[in-house]
Image (cartoon, rainbow, N blue to C red):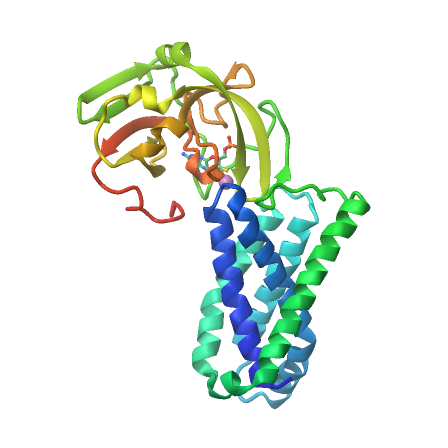
Length: 330
Ligand SMILES: Nc1nc2c(c(=O)[nH]1)N[C@H]1C(S)=C(S)[C@@H](COP(=O)(O)O)O[C@H]1N2
Ligand SMILES: [Mo]
């Protein structure tokens, strides 16, 4: 295979891993299995291409026309992303950073370098489209990676490797009751909230209401839902929560803005009020401080970053729900 063909293949696969990785994080329902599987196959295909890329890397190092640091960093970051991706899939247990957190960090850090590398030596795509053999090779590569992915999964299940059983998001089961990890999206710290003085502020077109914790707890019903964190674990928990639709009955608008005591926010479609809960407890106890005391959002079918903890305000607004970053920025 030519150097250009290999580079073009690598570039296409890198783009594919970013797109499928982001999609896997954005989707919290069973549909996530598609981008998750595609992500794994693209990653394996990068591994399969490595032997073709190696001679060019070696030659580039020998020639030393430019400083090799940029390319070497890119190579290192992609290797780290691949290794931690495999470690996550295999169920390697690490706490903070998890294999998945390393995977995402290395993957994201490699992007600017890949763009820089591309600008330094642009790829000419002109011959590739005319090359039927290139298409065949691409097909063989993806077919091989797909077969490898299926075989690895089968071997893991047959050998009952720890972590062989994964959710459709690729996450591993970790804990139950309230004994599941306490995680923050990025840099939030567990705040100390005085449950007596605290009251949930609910603002709608009809006005403002304050809900003390005891009143919410009195309205709470049981709801079993799976918290699935993008750092790679999940837990299925029996929560006690108030259906958000009850607190927002009759409200008009387009979106629900949920704000935490820490400043963390997420915006939901108003139509989802019937699928969201304001949870006061889990596993028949009040929420622990780490899990969101006094109240947190329970959002079945959405990944963990939607499950806002330490909620102080819920506001119905006219802005559309998508008027926010797809993933939280703080
Ligand atoms: N205020 C606030 N809520 C938050 C977060 C955060 O950083 N700040 N992290 C979210 C993420 S990414 C996850 S996975 C869950 C984790 O909930 P747990 O700590 O109860 O397991 O909380 C969500 N709610
Ligand atoms: Mo998370």
